[in-house]
Length: 314
Length: 275
Image (cartoon, rainbow over all chains, first blue to last red; front, top):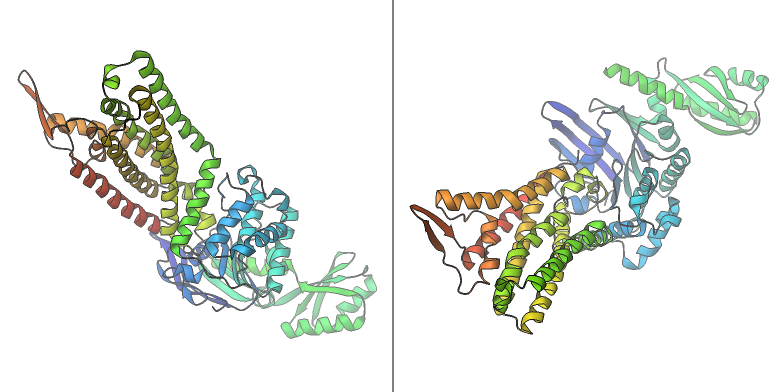
């Protein structure tokens, strides 16, 4: 089965209200794609169409090249999804709830026990494995829900705002889980309205508003295309405090339009130009041997691009 | 990534049944329904033991007719409402459907799995009530079970199948569990009986279209001889027509109710959207 998710002229309307309009989007390969948009933009609608929880008014939702609506069992055989915050039968324990999903998905019986333990361990719920789910907090239930996605070791994963209901530590842990899935060559399609989450975890981003796809590209290209003045903001992390002389040196580098200190060891660098300019900056910073330990597009840059894009659709 | 084959729809149906049953057995509703069945049986035991009414103590068949023939249908209706009333609507209202529906499983497997679980749980309640009935009969009449009681029991199981079909249909029709349960309660416990009486008395037409009329075979089979299909009772100038459903008619009504409501319920669940 191909590792792909594809929307072909996908439309969903409720009477005169169009929740999703003629979406054409093809996601392939092992990577994480963030799905961004304001509340009511059509993110959850799209994910529900990909899991056959709702029917398309027009078009097709394909997972692994197979139409989900006409052949759901085959289409979702290698795909697991977490849509909204599902409730689990309150009288079941996490082990039982995950056993049900494992049986439904055909996890071999000899592997089930270990898979359940591993999944619960990954979401830090192992010590609660034999307690009834009905007594869990929303965050704990969401952890079990995430474990249910991991249980079958799927090649395609769809997550609808997976950190909803989690405390900051839980959110961070979920991001680490998504990153580890990425390292294991999964295709992850994750809706979120948390820009820092998308910047931290995703390689690419699809932006949607009013049911229409606004853009789909790598995060850096989105920032380049949609930032107000074509600038590109990078957050650079250092292993030690950066002093003013170093900041001045960086300010003199080619394509650098400005710098601002985030804190003692982090600097925001605004550059002009495309991906090549960014590559050049990284090379020059490394050559300076000033203790650069991280280099990533700024969350605020994505936020700025996002707000510009949303503003254009108002 | 591990390669695994998704089980057949039948295997998935049984998986849903297994975990739904586990949920029932752990939840209070099974205990409550079991308690209701036991309380009804215990009350009947006490009342019959104390007052010794002649309708119960004349013969074994009369005992079954008075005990089982009048109460079995209510046990069926109550357990169907307890286990089937919110079985499908709850998937939407409580969002439990979001946990299962997004997996590689047909909705028909979920529907049938839940139906089977509700049937098994209800059947267990009925078996407990049967045990209490048979033990009481044994106390008064010894080890003597008329074959009509076996037939009546089988008709009760058919009625359970039929009522669960109807209950699941209403559960699929409404997204709100309370509306689904209320509709079933009102129809099964009040409306159908009222319509049946009105149709009998004033329209002088056989109420063949009512499931409760079809269920009449549960009690009728325990009446010896079997009641006349049509009976006219005169009170002066007023004649009241009453109908007793025949066995083939009753079986057909219950079977048709099940087939029609099961198909409609399944189609509704297949088409209903999680939004």
